[in-house]
Each structure stands twice: as structure tokens, then as C-alpha cells.
Image (cartoon, rainbow, N blue to C red; front, side):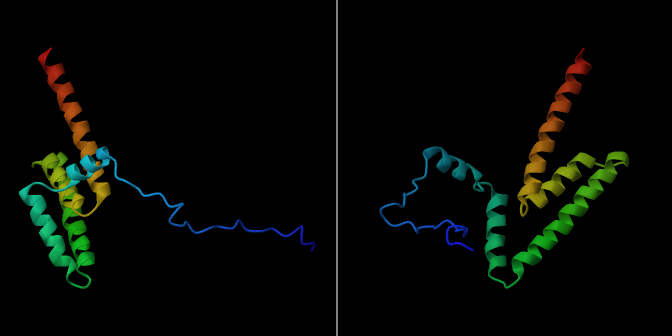
Length: 130
């Protein structure tokens, strides 16, 4: 093989102090971060629980499993209550709220689902008033 036929990997250069840019937080990102913090009494209790659980080895995993089981059972019970007597939507939202304390996906699903239910309710009220 000829030396000109060799495939060379691109060389990377470590950034130096002169080439490294200092990232300054933009004001709008600071506001978003401030808005995402827990401000309610429940949020403060969840934060305190996380601090205590983080002090125990394996505590965070145990908490995530417990939250997953309890939240999942509430969501399943809520789905069952959609066709059975009981507060189905309330149980579903409560289960998603419990799951949302540990899982960001559940929080996004809860927000999406809540918006859909609000739209459906507004449509129903408008239709009924005609």
C-alpha cells in the first residue's frame, strides 16, 4: 500500500483558552429554568424526598421503581374506570402526575393529554349550547 493511499483520520485539536468560548446564559433561558423549578408545597416536598433518597445507596432506583408501579397502577385503574363507574380521567391524570415526578416523558404525555381533554370539553360545551 502506498503512503498516499492510506486513509487518515481527521486530527482533532483540543480547545485552548484562547479558542474556547465562554457560554453566557441568555436571559430567556434563565427565565425558562426559573419557571421549571418547583414552587408549590408539593414540589418542595418532592425535592426534599429526592435529597433524602439520594443519600441512600440505590435509593433513587428504588424510588423510580416505586413511582413507576404506583403511577402505572393509577393510570391502568383510570383506564378501567373510563368504562366502569368511577373517576377515570381523574385517576389517569393523577397517575401521570405521579409518574411525572420521576419521568419527563410522563410529564409531557400528561400536558399533551390535558390539552386534548380541554379542547374536547370546549367543543362539547359549544356543541351543547347550540
